[in-house]
Amino acid sequence: MSYSFDARHGLIILLAELFGTSGSIIVRLALDTGATRTTINVGLLTTIGYDPSLVPDAFK
Image (cartoon, rainbow, N blue to C red; front, side, top):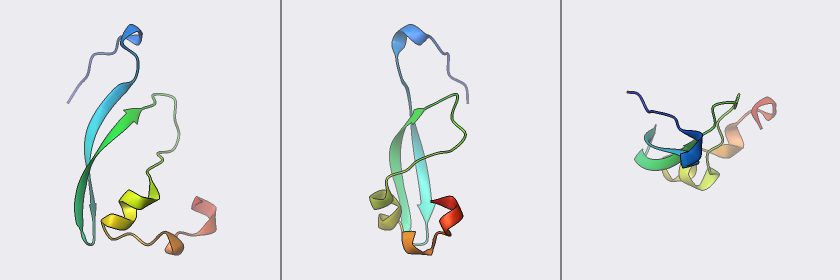
């Protein structure tokens, strides 16, 4: 998969499917080419079966 980048067009928005123990969900993500981490709304993760309380403090 490839996307052409043109800074004049603003944010690059991608569709992604996230999988969890309770199913999957399709989300729209903004691509940050300089990011070292990905942030996803905790409500979406809970919907597909992830429990945020189980995440070690080092990853919060």
